[in-house]
Length: 311
Image (cartoon, rainbow, N blue to C red):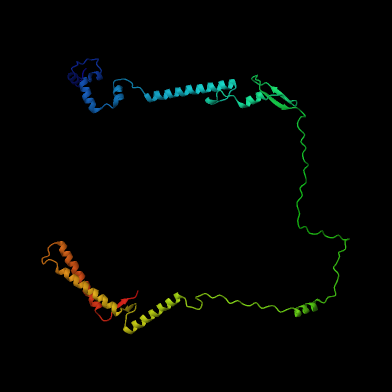
């Protein structure tokens, strides 16, 4: 029995459904509908994707390249093994291409200087039946090499003490003397000349000898200056840690402050009568604050005695 969905799909596609029709055949749409809707739902990603959708299996080039490389490696390995076996069979070792036609100097020298000496025996033959020969010495023909006898080791002894005398040896003593050594020593001391007194050389004195060093003089002056200031402070009623400013320095400072006061006043006089902008207001306030600060300083330095803090 055909379902309503199958009938609707058949009507859309224009194909009459049959009882034996498969669901895939019934729902199959025209090529135009498939290309337009399918590209939106499942877009094609490259040529290989399009071939796979058509049922064509795309070629795996990477796998083919790996197989080709392995085949080349196998052929090269077989050729190398064959060359090694050929070299072993012929008795020739590995040689570079530029030395292929060059014979071994050892073999050439052996073939040209192969003369059997009377005291040697030439042996030929081998596993391969070659003509390679070797020379050996005959028995008893080795030259007689006399070895020097081994000398016993003797330690070199220096500054050896004399041997202890034996019991039958008599020691020869020095002859006795009747000299009075006490009397002779006293006589030598009395008759000896008095020892000469070495004259002491006058030591060389440096240029600053007996002078007070400069740093001590400077330190002494600093101490005297601090002592003088302390006495003046006590006499003038100066607070501790401060000293009286000299009169000349006070007058110079007062003169500079008065000139600054006049200059600030002139700047204030140049301001407009009506101040409206924010910049003009800030400038006026700054000049007035500066004028007040200078006025306070003039009041301080206008006094007869000004005390400043010690350095």
